Every structure is written in structure tokens, then in C-alpha cells.
Image (cartoon, rainbow, N blue to C red):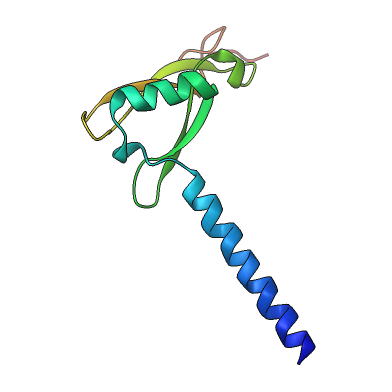
Length: 104
């Protein structure tokens, strides 16, 4: 019986942890464009929920990217704008240094 109570408590705590983690990610669709931009500016990098089963990280500057990545403007749908320029995303450059025909 004691083992059953311990396992029950463990499952409840695990469920609470998962709920808290999901709730901690702000939903971009429920914010205004200005609120989303301000949140990224304040925190530097924010992972927003962008859809029912999707999320994306938005960054304020290059320091959040890998060494070989560059910044691209990242847009998202907010409460007041279909295409809000929230912040940036880190991506590989479109044309890497040296071009595509490098053999070295």
C-alpha cells in the first residue's frame, strides 16, 4: 500500500511539472505585436508557442546564435497582426563563405 501511495505521488508531481513547463511558454497568438517584441528585447531570447502543436525561439541579437549562423527577421502571428516582425531567428547563411562549390 505504501508503495502505491509513493507511485501515485510521483505521477502527480510529474504531471504538475509537465503542465507548468507547457504553461511557462508564452503564446504569441495571444499577445500584441508590441508585447511580443518587448518580451524578446527584455529577455534576449524567448520560446513562444506559435500554434496548437508548434513553437519557435525568437532572439534579440547574434549572441544567441551558433558561431556560423546569421540573423534573419522572424515573423509571427500575434493578436493584432498577421505578420508581426517579432525579432530574429538564427539560421545558416543562404550563401556560405566561399560559395557552394567548395571542395576543401
